[in-house]
Every structure is written in C-alpha cells, then in structure tokens.
Image 1: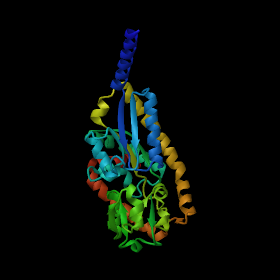
Image 2 (image 1 turned 180 degrees about the vertical axis):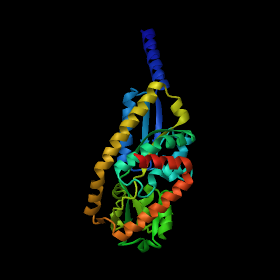
Image 3 (image 1 turned 90 degrees about the vertical axis):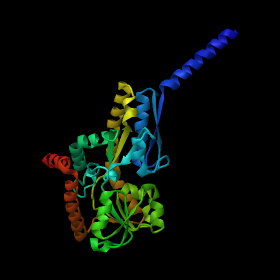
Image 4 (image 1 turned 30 degrees about the vertical axis):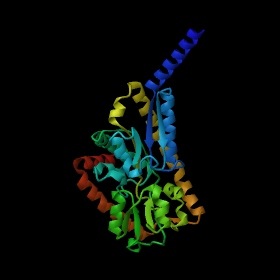
Length: 324
C-alpha cells in the first residue's frame, strides 16, 4: 500500500513538473485602464492564445501602467523585462520616424484611410521593429482625434500660451506651431494633470476623454479628426523565437483576430464616446472654418517635415498610400 501511494505521489509530482516545465507565462504591460477597449481587446487576445495553445502559453495583462509606465513599455519588451507589451507606437518617433506614420495630421483621418495607410506602411514598420528585437503582432487604431479645451476656440490664435498635453512628437509639434506650451503627460496621469491645471488642452480620441472623465475639468471638444494613432502589440524577438512553430502560429492568428475585432469596436464606439462627452456637459461639435484651416495648414507643414525625416522609405509609403 505504501509503495502504491509513493508511486502515485511520484507520478503526480512528475505530471506537475512536466506541466510547469512546458507551460509558459508572459506578463503583458499596457498603458490604459482595464475598462479601455484596447485593454479589453488585449485580454481577449490573451484568452485566444491560451485556448489555442491549450494552456501552454499564458499571457497576463497588467493594465493602466501598473507594471511599467506607458513610456517604459517598449524598452521593457526590447530588453526582455517583459515578453510582450502594447504601446502607442507614435510616441517613439524620436527613435524612427516611421513609427509616426499613423500620426501625420490630416493625412489619413478616417478608419478606411487609416487602414490603407497602415497597409502601405506595415512591412517597413515591422522591419524597423525587428531591427530593435521586436516582433510585430497586431495593431488597433484609436477613434479619430479631436481637440479638448477649457475655453471656446475659433482659431489657432486662441490656443496661444495654452498648456497642452503632448504624448508624441506630432502633438508636441502641433503645440509648437500653434504657440501652445507642450507638457508630456501619459494617459494614466491625465485626469490629475487636468484637475491641477498642469494641462488645459489636448488632442486625443473620445475614448481617452471618457476614460479620464475630462468633463470634470474641460468644456469643449472639437471633432477635428486629426489622425487615428495606433496601439501596437509586439513581442521580444528572442522570446518569440523560443516558441515552437505551432505556438507562433497561434499568437499571430490570435493577433489577426484581435486586430479585426479591435477595429470593429473602435469604429462602433466612436459615436458613442462623443455622445457620452455631450451627456456629461461638454460642448461637442465640428471645428469652425478658421480653426479647421489652421489645423490643415499644420498638417501640410508636418507632412513635409515627416517626409524629410523618413527619407526614401517614408516617400515609398506615402506614394503607395496615395496610389491605392
């Protein structure tokens, strides 16, 4: 009897050891709240991976910058501190201008145009990420970006001297062109920055406004539809290369599914977010002709500046985008 118990115990231990030896767990830092649709989509992606690998690969999402702050996520994945992560890629335009292709103002200001631009850019963006030891998995566009302000704005001149939340090179440049004062603020810090007067204006989607309850500090939302920036999910190349082929296929297949589902959700939520802003007391509307003209002028300037930085690769992307 004792021998039987010992044998059973040894077998159970061996099975447990085998399971732990072959199961893999990845931590996935993201910058946005658990309630944000990007984060919810990431959670669905991780479930897809767990199901597809029959539990051999478990990915745990850490929301709202709780594991790494937003501006640290990409570096954490590059250096292997986290195996996988999600990041607003345009925030790293200082590393490679191709990372900001989705944030050139008024170049692609609808979902269809954004998809067409991304299709033209994806091969070169993926190669740029791979050069930094990152493997591209999927991306999802935010709803079109609008202008949030504390006061009524009829032209860019009305923005002069305003403290403006910048989250990437494009927003910082818009601030400079309009004579605003750029302040670097991550999404998780936005509510407090607005409440304490660190910032009085910013450009972002309706999603960010709802997440941060900006109606507690700001009054106006102008639907300028400046661009549709993308959150990109990438894996550390060494970690990805360590997966077997079947697991790699699951990750990529689930990524393709997450890209499709995420965009469908983003499209669906666009009008809902603006309605919610209005229901909470914000004045939501289109920009006046002068403000629209001023912003389009900024866009033309910034397109030329981006092309100068991005060189032949950037020109090839824009040419392909405009040709289709």
